[in-house]
Image 1 (cartoon, one colour):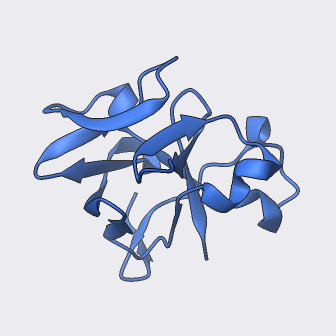
Image 2 (tube, one colour):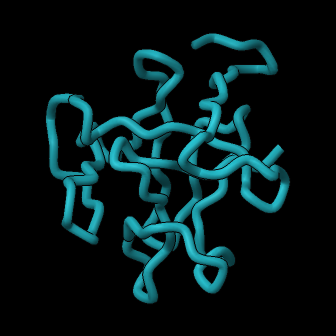
Length: 121
């Protein structure tokens, strides 16, 4: 099952033209570029190398590269690995792809993360 990654500000992560991670409001014309993950994955293979997915609190996940966490600051489009400590802006929620659900993004139900097929958060 493919899941999208949503920030704490209800924006979504997508691949930029140069392989950077960008946060954006969901739009149908950007849907093909949204980053999709499988709940059993522990790595996202990206254009700029592997990104590690780890569990965080309340069913959220963190993304990191070389031990540094990706941060989605409000009103900043670029999401970069720039933080040594996890806070709200360094956590992401897995949500069903809109095409698979009639649920509005603003009423989205956050899905638990799994590891080896078992719910762990």
